[in-house]
Amino acid sequence: MPYFYFDQWYFLLVVPAMILGLIAQVRVKSAYSRWSGVRVSTGLTGTDAARIVLQRGGVRDVQVTSVGGQLTDHYDPAKKSLALSEGVYGAASVAAVGIAAHEAGHALQHAEGYFPLKIRTAIIPLTRFGSAAAPFVLLAGVLFSFEPLVLAGILCFSLAALFQLVTLPVEFNASRRALTALEESGVIRTEEERTGVKRVLSAAAMTYVAALISSLATILRLLLLFTNRRR
Ligand SMILES: [Zn+2]
Image 1 (cartoon, protein in one colour):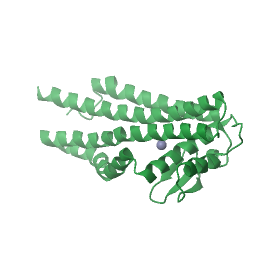
Image 2 (spheres, helix red, strand yellow; image 1 turned 135 degrees about the vertical axis):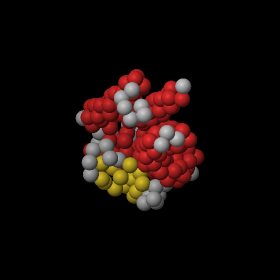
Image 3 (cartoon, helix red, strand yellow; image 1 turned 45 degrees about the vertical axis):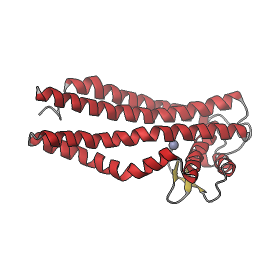
Image 4 (tube, protein in one colour; image 1 turned 30 degrees about the vertical axis):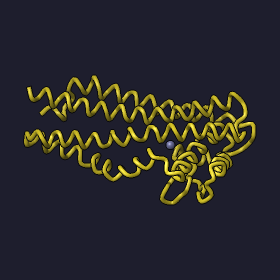
C-alpha cells in the first residue's frame, strides 16, 4: 500500500512541482506589488480600462463591480459581471489596468463564444466530481487491492488536470486581448507600461502552468507506483 506514503516519486515529482507552484505565487505577488506602485500616464483606472476593453469589443451588457480582497478579480459569466478587487477597481496603476483588461478579455471571450472557454465551462461539473471523488476511489482501490478501482482513481485525478489544461489557452488568450486593447486604445502609452502589464499578466499565467504541472506530477507518481506494484 504505497500510495499514501512519502515514496521516492513523491520527493522526485510532487515536491518539485509544489516548489514551482510556490515560486509562481511569490512572483505574482511581487509583480503585482511592484507594478501597483507605478501610475499609468493616462491616469485611467482599472474600471476605466475594463470599460474601454468591453466597449471596443462591442460588449454592453456586462457590469463592472468591486469585490473585496487582493487579486480576487474575476469575470462571472452567469451574472455577466466583472468583479474588480480594491487595488484594481479605482486604482490608476499599471497592474490595475492590466488585470482589469485581462478580466474584460474573459468577458469578450464569453460574448463571442470563444471555443476553449466553452469547453472549460462544459467540463466543470465533471472535473469537480473527479477532484472530489479521486482520493476516495483511490483509497478504496488500494484497501481492497482492486486494480480497476485504483486506475479509476487515477482517471479521476486526470479530470482535474484536463480542466487545468483547457484553462491555459483561455488565460493566454485573455491576456493577449488585454495587451492589444490597452495599446490600441491608448490606455497605456509608454514602453515601461507595456513591460509592466506583460510582467503582471505573464506572472499570473505561470500560476496556471504550475497548477497543471503539479497535477501531472501527481498523476505520473500514481501511475509509477501502480506499475511498480504490479511487478
Ligand atoms: Zn484569467
